[in-house]
Amino acid sequence: FNQIPAKESQDDTKAPLPKGVVLDKDGKPCRTCTSVASWRALTKQAKAESAAPSDTSPLSSSADKMTTATTPLAAAASPAAPSTPAECPPDVEELGRSTWTLLHTMAATYPEKADIQQQNDMQGFLKFFSRLYPCWVCADDFKTWMAHPSGRNQPKLSGRKEFGWWMCEAHNEVNRKLGKKEFDCRFWEERWRTGWKD
Ligand code: FAD
Image (cartoon, rainbow, N blue to C red; front, top):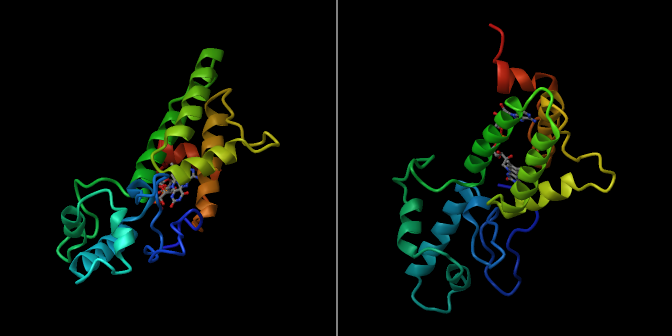
């Protein structure tokens, strides 16, 4: 897992957390910033730690940072757990997929020509979204991208086509960062508004 290369836990004095585990600003593992795979590795580590004979185990420091008691975390890591746990809190990927669905659908239902009020409303939404998105590393990068000093990444809010294209570019920025294939923005409406022609 190398989807969030920066801002992972790195504390030389403590046992390293599994790759891909991202910490919250308070130093606890951030579930919504971390993939299921990395989260499982973390729970496995915590389980090993709780089974260790002494408190001096090098894993104790990371286990101390767990937000949840060992039992539910260990349960999530059990071999019987399904690969995509149902009815569980979202990881960074599930949260991302759901959020992109919301964001692109907002673009798809945006007015063809937006009046000032509608533009201001969407501007406000994006501003708060980029502060409040629950994966804080994602939010930070998104905010930084939007605030590029050239102004070239500012939301284009005059109407649906411009906004939909802008959202597609924003999503492609994240795709690039994660090493994913870029989406051809000429087709954003087919994907998110009209559907594909048969
Ligand atoms: P997703 O990228 O979630 O895409 C869902 C669907 O959207 C695709 O199946 C495709 O049909 C369509 N699509 C793909 N690209 C585009 C596009 N450019 N325009 C229109 N439609 C498109 N994850 C991290 O690990 N690190 C991050 O820093 C990070 N930052 C994020 C920032 C934001 C604002 C959001 C909303 C999500 C972020 N994510 C991040 C999550 C990440 O973008 C993905 O959602 C997640 O990895 C799941 O990817 P996926 O391959 O299932 O498809």
